[in-house]
Image 1: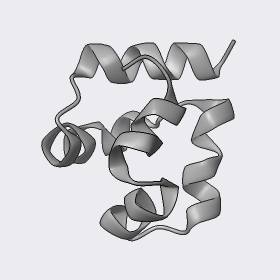
Image 2: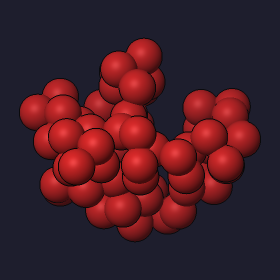
Image 3: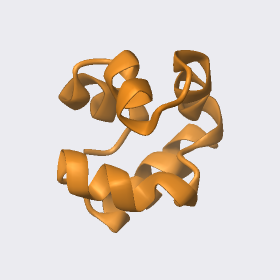
Length: 64
């Protein structure tokens, strides 16, 4: 997994991630441009089976 969009697809959409993190969907959608804040990495790793390396790659891709 290399992009935030791929994470959204795996999770069933940004709405599912927003629900899991108790956040609004707009904040999650912004990750496509700003990357994924490190504060949420542990939860995402546990819930969706992604690695820290993948999350770092997604964040780098988003910030290009």
